[in-house]
Image 1 (cartoon, rainbow, N blue to C red):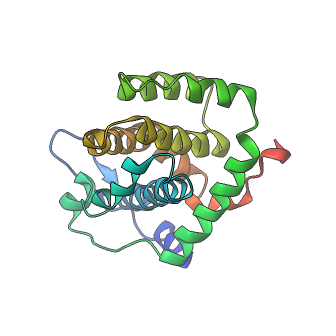
Image 2 (cartoon, rainbow, N blue to C red):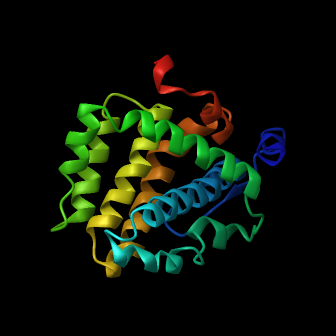
Image 3 (tube, rainbow, N blue to C red):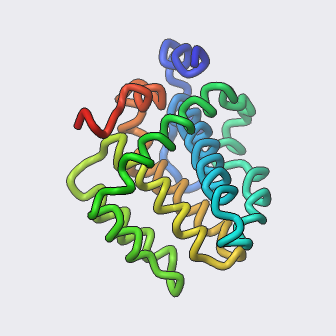
Length: 192
């Protein structure tokens, strides 16, 4: 947890990827934590439901690749494993509470295996049309899992790349404005 907080006190170094805007070091770190959280959440949910969806057992192929921002920055500092675990556990508790919401159930059921990326894009656009909050980010991660669950294993990389671009382009700045991922720990759906 201290690692993320100490990054806020540093000057904002920037990194550039080809064809991309400049990303601050804190945004880059937020994306690395986001990737670890997304992979962890998907793997945890897949393990819980592996008997129903055996193709999800091949998710280990997703963990090794670095994001374009990581490659360009030359930074290889890994997010703190204890922090990621704590955030992931909190996300799972939030998700447990949110999954009974009728709108979330409706949107999850709208995810199609015929064109999973388009389904994820449409659901994500609808969900964030009126703004960003922690609950919606958790649900976005859950919907990404649903797309993995519905997709052929050959699409795992494409889905992950799309989700990470959406996180970078639409959510990372908001997360940074909330003080980083640790702000999630103060969120409870029942307090909304």
